[in-house]
Image (cartoon, rainbow, N blue to C red; front, top):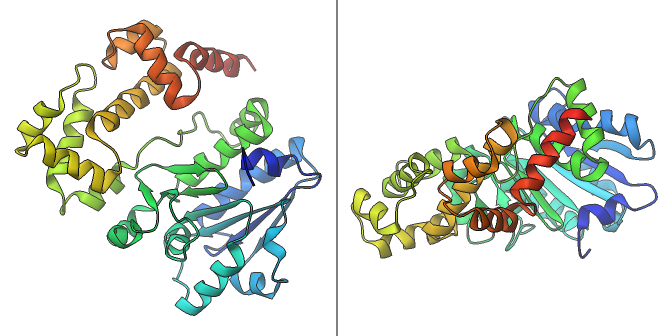
Amino acid sequence: MTGDALSRWWATPAPRLCVVDLAGPQALVSASFLEPFRHAARLARPDLTISCTDFAALLREPPGCCKDPALFLVVLGGAHSGEPEAALLEQVCARLAPAPLLAAVGTAAAWLVRGGLFDGRRVALPWEAHWEADQLADRAILAPNLYEVDSERLSCCGGAATLDFSLHLIARLFGPEIEAQVKEALFIDRVREPGERQRVALQARFGGLQPKLTQAVALMEANLEEPLTADDIAGVVGISRRQLERLFKQYLNSVPSRYYLELRLQRARKLLIETSHSIVQVGLMCGFSSGSHFSTAYGALFGVTPREERQRKLLAAIS
């Protein structure tokens, strides 16, 4: 499936959402993912079939069942989900591999990375899986974000972020009006964006092992309005600039300047959505002295300009 995989799935005559629920119907990830979709389908897409299954039932299906372009497979794993045996996981991953659209949530993300289904893709892991980050990093690009959409492979760290992930997908598929109705029905006032980072995950993953890296990130977060240079940051944490760049490349798959820029832009987006500060003020508060530089950088990361972001907020407020 090329192009926008979600859109292509959504355009099929009778799309099917199949949730492989390993967390259990009472688990947070299960309710957080399924309830928004069920509500949205009742409002605007009655032809959307939503079903739940498990690994055993999935393996009883015909071998080619996962190749159906009308099928969106979502594997949910909760904090207390027991890890499947290696042989079972191998069978399941072989069955899931040809899926044109596949998502993994919570602990299931780590399992499917280990099974080779996210090779070379960006993936959001739950913080409790970061102890094996070094092994998983050989297969996938581990992003410290709440959720990731990498073409036909999607992932979410699980927990409360599953609700943000579900609503993000609903906004993309059903549109902002239906998303707003679902949010109202569920008493939700804000959806966290995919690029928002797991602060706990970053500390849990690197706090003890890479204190220089966590110190550098903390410095960046504390100095968004007047950004520091890479040399400044390296000097404060007590390493060379080359060592700093090596840490960011190895553990965050980025360079300090890019990571810092994304932190500032994430802060700008939060301010644009949640405050009434002018666009110029927001840019200055996030370290952009040039309005054109702010607009260009913002558009490159989020696909819309700051002005368009603010307009979307205003439209959502009156819809």
